[in-house]
Image (cartoon, rainbow, N blue to C red; front, side, top):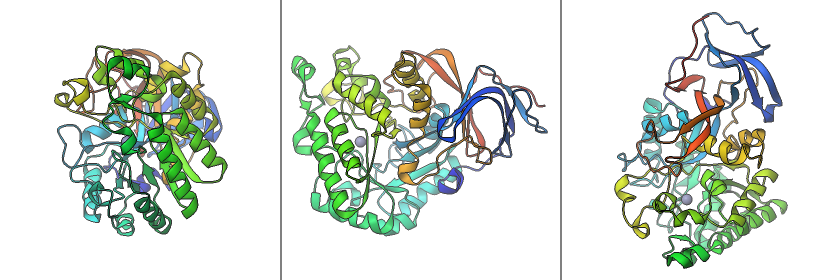
Length: 449
Ligand SMILES: [Zn+2]
């Protein structure tokens, strides 16, 4: 199965190009070397010797010194449609994804109204077939209108094409409702993705509870708000032999719970976001603190280190941006009132390359693997550069320096946590679902052969 078959995308011309002398790295497929990547009719036709690729009519991209990776997959994106198209929609959100090197994304269901019916899913899928520049899968809510009470018609939603279920934005507070949802999940498939926090422990918290929140006099969200709910849901998933995916892990305690659950054989997967891997709650002391307000909050350095260790040992199998566009009106208010969430699609690769790979914290192969690791937990085919596969390629220049926000964003929103930072590493070309989905304006592609 290909991404095109699994998800929805706007049809377009199939890519025909040769990435000449690219450094090709696909750790999962065991590919690591300099090749001509021959993309013919939207497929990886061949990894030829450097300078030896031939394909009639193909566009030649001189890619010497550049890296070709399997394009990335983000299982956690807020496209904001229906209801908040002034923040993002299918067209702008998938353009942002393509600019970030992504060949596929999953859209969360906390829209207005939330995606709770088969008709909602069908309408979004139709929109994606008209407007999406990379394949999109749609999640549906677990509970009707995300009220946490009644379950949606999960079987019907799956038949309509919902990739999975989530009330992301809110936890499922009731253990009884959660247990019922897991019983249906086992019946109809589709992973349940969980935003884990105990609403009573989180209270009115606006940042991590610790010395920084105490110093700033801000209400805190303790780490155990997250880890206790993960422990509950891991136990329920084990009891029902059902499958769960934990979203945006932020705390060391949470990592311990997921690791123990995996060791016990629970069907549990987990993601971490670039901002939790790169930043700590110290950022909230900055003048621009609103850029660092998200849920779950940035936590301690020891939490960040625990997330990195989990990324390395596979406890966290994927990186997810939790791309959460907001209009500036919702951010240019006092910290307590500012909306939670930051954008991330356009900067994830560059930020993680700059903050983790360049200083030697993780190696490039691991980053590339984890950036595409979000497909498998949702039964979406993993992007690969193996010959014969649908072409899903991110061509990157690891030496390119750029300042985030300088040339604007493809996203309709600008609430990037990287705004103004100089990052090293840039996506030049993205091929998604066999089509050229993005080319960096300042990077000129070659001539027809
Ligand atoms: Zn969330």
